[in-house]
Amino acid sequence: IGAGKLSGARLTNAALTGADLAGADLRGAELAKAQMSGADLSGANLAGANLKGADLSEANLSGADFWGAEIRRADLTKLKVDDTKGITEAEVGSSGKISIFDR
Image (cartoon, rainbow, N blue to C red):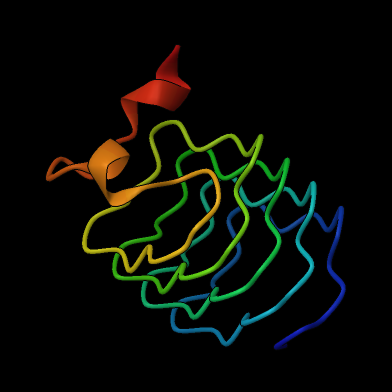
């Protein structure tokens, strides 16, 4: 799908394990509970996306934009987050949870 325009797409519970979503436009997409472990989301725009409860374990999020994204209860273990906007390694920590978004 790389660099595809999926803004606003409804992908709740989607099976996207290992998917190539590099550079994809996923602004405002519904990705709650999506299985995205090992996916390449480098450079993707996920601003305002709903990733609540999504499995993003071991995903490549380098350079992705997560500003305003809903990521509560998402699995964020073993991420690659270099230059990611809206998520930092310090915020994720070893627990794979981002407490700053749980307010």
